Image (cartoon, rainbow, N blue to C red):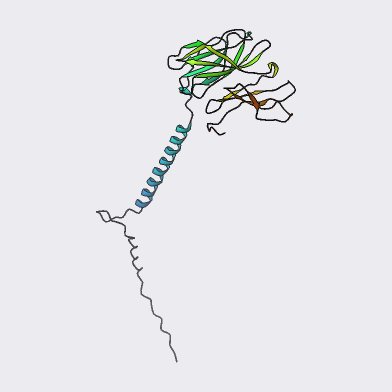
Length: 239
């Protein structure tokens, strides 16, 4: 015979919680730990990095912006100024000038960028334009159109002044199809300009031998369009 004895359970006490691992965190002198210390350091590091990135982008953008405040007017003449050409040494600028809007003539002017003084190089009932400096800076070439003439001219420049005794004709061009550009070869022995035989033909580039005065075409553009414009010669003598 089995008997079941009723027993009264003794009250149990809750076990004490085990201490959390320290994770190698330093303790304060009072024994308390700072659980948010690493989080605060990470936040400060991220904020510093963001400021550096913003500063770098701002600096790059500022340096890349053009400085238009450095531009200044070199001339203040009445009328219109066209086709400036800088001398090889950078001191002089020759350009075409029309005194009045209704005038059909243009003269060449020479500006000394150091003194700011301007002097007239040509005069007369002509349209003088598209000036181009020779590589040695001793002369310029330009187009001259009259009532029934079209010429490629040259003028020597000595000590910042035009030598009118040196003015001479280099080549003839068609009055109704005169080109819009001149360019010297690197050695200064050749001059390139554009011209056409008739108004129905496209403009071609011609090479002028300055010493002999002989010209020959070096391009043959198709009949479509107006042909070749705005010549720019390379600095290499063989090209």
